[in-house]
Image (cartoon, rainbow, N blue to C red; front, side, top):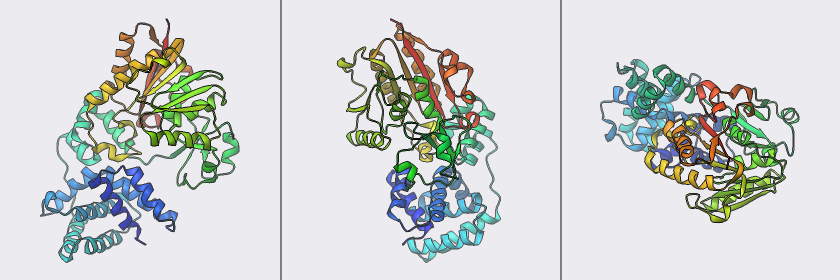
Length: 437
């Protein structure tokens, strides 16, 4: 069996050079090594997410301590250097000797004798030398906190330098495991008595949170007592506020977190149409609903960008959680930093889905638009454009619906953005509109 560092190395190779998603690559690798201890799994997870998140920073440090240019260093040796430097700079509990010696061993296995000597020399240089960062404060932010320069520049322009610095630092913090309690089966007070690592959230009363909790192997997950979900995402269904007996459609539903939450809020009474474009994701929705004991969800495979005539004015509530850059969930999926999607394509898709969604709301019904990003052009600009183009809709105050700690004044105007550095949640945007005629 491969040791923890080697396992982390192979996972990182899949992420950085084969385009794998960090959470999926990590899960697949850990599932394949069932005999591995929880301590090793936690160590691997920290290494994988840490090295992925700090990619730019680690490469910057390598350039200051290597006589060989980055592009001439082999892929495996580059990753081994990053693993070693991450342990030296960001993992206080790892002895320096272990970080260096284990990296040298990996270099011998995945390179040659000269590679091992090179890795040893660079890591000792890193221990000895101080990192020299750029004088320009935005460029330093990019290199030190390891975010693409374009992202730092954009957010500094949008939010100001100090807010952006706080935001990036918060995004680099390890997020707690947050679980939504399935009220159809159990109450939060009853649940936390069974799991000492979990406590009721101080933000939302129907969520529990904790650290070092293995969700997938947990009995409370298998029994359908909980669903892993950030509180910002839970707020989406809370804001939509579906009632018992209503007819609801979730146009971009997979894997079903918001659809199943709505079913719980409806006391499993009514109808929810949960849609997705991909068949395998439809299966995810169905499996989650079954595990949670929910039977009012009907799945449908469809392209939400295409208008469906039979849905016209057919729903009391419509949820539109559109595809986005995902910049609000970087702390859980750090590889998102390095995937520069076309914002124009994302906006086009968002606009098409939102336009169709508006047609599916009955008179007097409501629509919620949400994203897991914090960018104005994906959020406020889209819902304001929709309202301008659809005079039969108006923004709706949902301030009182939000958990008290998430009540921002803009919610009175019908929209809100959550930020990791302010709200201690993922970055998320929610807007609500009502069809008046």
